[in-house]
Length: 481
Image (cartoon, rainbow, N blue to C red):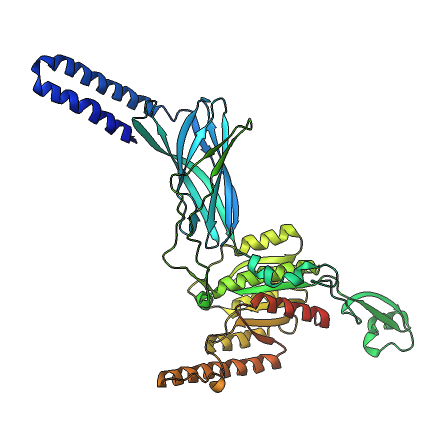
């Protein structure tokens, strides 16, 4: 698309109007006026034709994959190829998807002469995790005389993966992850006999009857004792509930984006180290109408990744299972940086579904696929009596084989009746009474699960990750696995 520039309007006013007025006032100068006006229109037409060719040899190359963290400023580099190697000014714009804040809506780029390739760094910020794509970019160039602007859209393909921001949670757990001197998470000292079979040996007086291998004793004709060892690597699984209850507001608003004007300038670097500074036409940062709220699932995803980091430092195997009315994703427990990247990729696009969780399906899946004893950390919500009954009914399938920890965020208002003395109206009284009933039902559920050997805990919004890590370290220290 070709668009007239301000310079063209200026010269139309300076050339066309005076000679048209001269033609009307003095008919003797009609021929001269017509010649000059025709020459001007011819020059404008030639400049318009050349404007269509101003994009010849120009192409934009975006990176195939960009990884960012939600709420943190990031940037990516794009390449501008100049096949004709001529000095040229371009205006580049990118259409960011919703959920992004671009510090620059568009930028002016100066392509130096004699350089085929230039690079441009583009700052941006994502406010929500997920997978996004940019499928085209927009370019605008000037005609040789500057009378016209030629605008076009070029196809592109860039995938942006926005991961949860773990920086804030790691700041709260900085002392645990420092691992220096007497501070940080160190490998827990394992004491006791252990549970994993190592070998057989001859009976020694003082060995317990429960340590005797009776089949080997009957075969050899003399007592044989089993020797156990401490489990060095244990399997830790986080089971995430992504059903309708996980879409509730966790009560923690996202920090509003900065409204100050960014003074950053993009730096264009050519392959022959030619550097020029370019200024953006639009420097105002976009703002959202209202900051979104963090859901319960968002908090659970962040806490699960933090727990994965803690398990990796302890040398354990970490795995994931997400479910709704069916099992959505399953990542078998492993360790290492590559495996942690797999777990992160499995969670960064996880969104809540408006369905009821099926505990029958998930417990049957665990029974069939997890043969080795493991620590199962459920992150779900059981304040619905029907869901709590279903969970109790199905947890018997796995509680004897695995160690099960059930965690949920503390429901808002669920507290004992007289714990809050701020009652100003009858409505406040009924609201506190309803919160007391919810608290009482959850405490009854805790006792029912405790009789089945399942630990049920409430987590706080601000300390959710720290509390999960503390539970895990307590299990390691007490050798409950």
